[in-house]
Amino acid sequence: MRLQVLGGYGGESSGCRMTCLLINGSVALDAGSLSQALTIEQQVDVHSILLTHSHMDHTNSLPFFIENVYGKSDRPIDIHASEATVYAIRKYLFNNATWPDFTRLPNHLLPAVRFVEFQSETPLSIDGVTFTPIPVDHLVPTHGFLIEQDGAAILWSSDTGPTQRFWEVANRTPNLKAVCIDTSFDNSLQQIADVSFHLTPQTLEAELRKLKRKVPVLLHHLKPPCIEKIHEEVRRLGNPDIGFLEQGREYRF
Ligand SMILES: [Zn+2]
Ligand SMILES: [Zn+2]
Image (cartoon, rainbow, N blue to C red; front, top):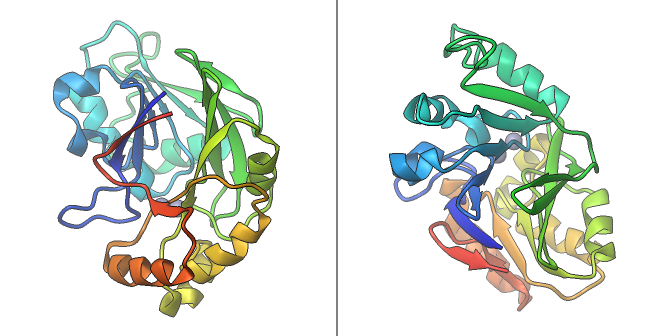
């Protein structure tokens, strides 16, 4: 499995793109930076997008990505998401006021975009990769994903505060190669992290006590103003299994 980190951050600034992973060049997890990170030719190869939740740092490139690839494929773009996320995207993004409703363009029979609803913990298979949505704890209904191909599994949290099911899945998956988990704010912003359902290095440390096995733990979704402090606070944890999911890097599992 080839995993490219197109956007590794929970906000945007020079050098920081918003949350977006690309699996095997064709399936995107979240759409925070599809149009910013890929050429038009590379964007045309992306035919499926799985959304973890409706927040803008995970969806903001959808309008421009869809415009870039419009008419360049004979099949619609599949956007896989939960019922709550589909509802929010339809109501607040593709509502013709914010952006045209591409599920009805050029017409509703041959649309440019198609929503496909997924259910918690029901695996879906795309191009030989299995994605299982795992509910996590965030401000709005949100899923992380267990991503599996050829005997390798990666567990990716998306946005979450302290959570339970995610760690149960990590502990019961024998071929787990890495866990990717939210660490959005530094410890001085604990109160903001708590009310917005994100982790800091100190709540990450408590969360990792729920992980009963030794696998690399890759942190993602850092808020750009917090990057330096988070790195320092994580270094002080002294846990050699913890690293950072690096934007621009390609991982193979
Ligand atoms: Zn986010
Ligand atoms: Zn969010």
